[in-house]
Length: 192
Image 1 (cartoon, rainbow, N blue to C red):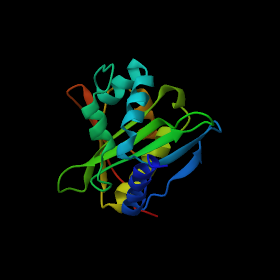
Image 2 (image 1 turned 90 degrees about the vertical axis):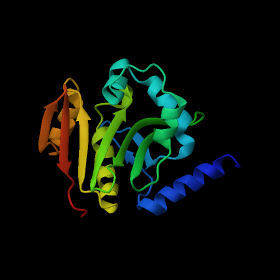
Image 3 (image 1 turned 180 degrees about the vertical axis):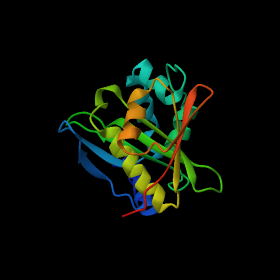
């Protein structure tokens, strides 16, 4: 029970700071995942998630063929301030097994602006189930609560899945091919 206390504290801080309430969602194929703010204690789960991704998925997320995520990078990705730097994780937890991260969406606000850079990654076995769309939509809702009005993504041209996802969500308004990557920005809808 003692080991769970820091994780619970981190999650409560996230809920209080963001207004995001952790919940279970059902994907297109009927499978269920738990959405919650990331916690510093998720570093080992991030390592496992990246290790379970195909080379292609890792390359699309990090733009380089990393074999193992460094501890420093895992720490930077897991430790957020729940305002200018925020991340949501989608997790699964089967009976008799530990929690595992199957998707992550994050934003990092550009200093003193209403714009944030966004990144999304979904492990291969959970792709094409609608999880990326859910993560992006929920991340946008949290961002608007924190006065972020514009998301910017950098997407490789061969990442047709992400380009299609953004197109289907109606979120490709400005896309420029610069230095071999698409720079995509879009204004977030107002909070309903």
